[in-house]
Structures are given as structure tokens and as C-alpha cells.
Image (cartoon, rainbow, N blue to C red; front, side):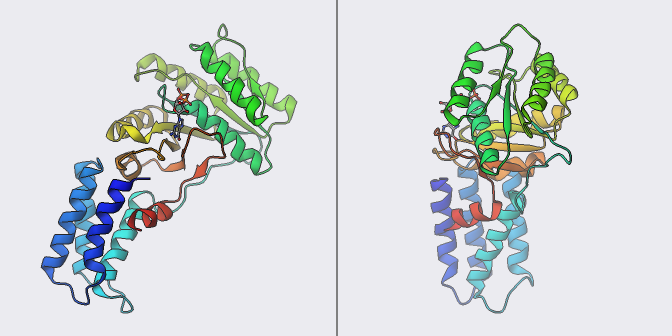
Length: 295
Ligand code: GDP
């Protein structure tokens, strides 16, 4: 995961770790390498500049712990700033005070939304919840079928009304079905398009008004780098997205999306997708990813 970024940052940090004394030139050289590593990972230029500046300020300032060597201190600062960049602490799902908790999933086609919804349903069941998935993508019958296939695979119910009913009506009836079944978590799968368009946004807005979800989670593909960040910006501006599910982080994604979604949009990553297999979705821990990257 993020191997390129990880190995180039580890190299830069490796030079510092062993040093008992650090000159300003040592810090400057390490910061140059950090900057190049982040740019190569497709991190937004402004984010890189601010990041390096913050690390440099702390590294040459008074922010030191006596128990660490100067080199170790800079490594610690980089670790802390990476963690902060990705949101600091784990961002959890807001559960409804009175069930059911409603979670709406949005995203572009191919991002991994259907896979993510099944994984999310599985995570909730693992925590003793009773999820129901609602198929509200009426434009692609294949999407409804796919959700049923996954639902069967994980033995979690799926509600659909085919493709002839409006998504708003489907979710309304789906909520009644949730009540009948005693489901305490409702996961709404919405239409994905190849590109963001106004019709899509208007429809998502209508569904959102109809179900008043506790969470609107945007599914984005880590492999698309800064494009994922632009998608997140656009969805967030229009729908007040409450969290991001970053998929395909198991592949050869360079890391730009993971490192910058939060910084650019203000919206935290809540889960990551690490494979095609339907397993419970992994909650996102900024500190763990930062330490994994730095080795
Ligand atoms: P949707 O169009 O957004 O609903 O996307 P799908 O859920 O159908 O996923 C599109 C493709 O990406 C499928 O081939 C999935 O198996 C694959 N996929 C989804 N999530 C992941 C992931 O986290 N890692 C990998 N490697 N593949 C994924």
C-alpha cells in the first residue's frame, strides 16, 4: 500500500534518524526529499508547500523532546504532521440517537460504491446491528442485480422496487420496510454516473431531503489521485458530505487522495477499501497509516 511514497519518505527519514546533531542544511535536504516524495505521490502542490513549511518551522524551532535525538525528533514531527494532515484522529460514524441510522452512499460509477455498501453492511452486522440495504440506482438494472448478489453472499436483506419507481419513493418505502424488519441501520445505494452532472446532484439532494440521513458517505477511488479530490470537493460543496470511503487503497494508488482529501475538502476519510473481496470495511486511522508510510 502506497509503496512508492513509503519508500521515498523512509529514505529521507533514514538519513536523519541516525544523526546525533542536525545542521540546518541536513533539515533543508530532508525537507527537499519530503517535498519531492509528496509531489511524486500526486499530493496537491499547495498542500505539499504548507506541509513542508510546518515541519520545517517545528524542526528548527523549540519543539523538541529531550529523550530523542535531533534526527528522531524530525521523524516524529513528520509523523505527527502526516497524521494531522489526514484528519488527526479516527472519524467515526454518527449513529442516530433513535434507530434506524440512515447512511446514504454516493459516488461516481466504478468507484466501488456497490462493493463498499456490502462491506459496510457486513461491518455493521459484525457489531450486532441489523442492516438493510436499499437499491435506489434506477438507471442501471445491473446495479440492482449486483446489490442482490452481494446481499445474498453476505446474507443481508436488500430492498428494491425495480427501475420504474422514483428513487425518492423507493427510499420512502424502503424506510417503511426497515421498520417492518426491525432494521437499525439503513444503507442507501444511489445512482452513480460516469461524470458529475446537475441531474445527478439534484436527485441525490432530493433523496437526502427525503431520508435526512445521519451520514452521507462519498465513495472515491484512490487510484484516481487528485481527480478523487476534485470529485470530493464537488460532492461536498453540493451535498455536505459527512465522510469519505476511499477505495482501492490496496492497489498501486500513489497516495495523493489519501493524504489530501481531508486537507482540501475538510471532509474526513471514515473508511478505506482494501480489496475486491467482500469483507468488513476497514475504519480509517490516520495515525496508523502515517506510521505505516514511515515504516
Ligand atoms: P460502483 O460502480 O461504484 O458500484 O463500483 P463497484 O462496487 O461495482 O466496483 C467497481 C470495481 O472495482 C469492481 O471490479 C470491484 O471489485 C472493484 N473494487 C471495489 N472496491 C475495491 C477495492 O477496495 N480494491 C480493489 N482492488 N478493487 C475494488
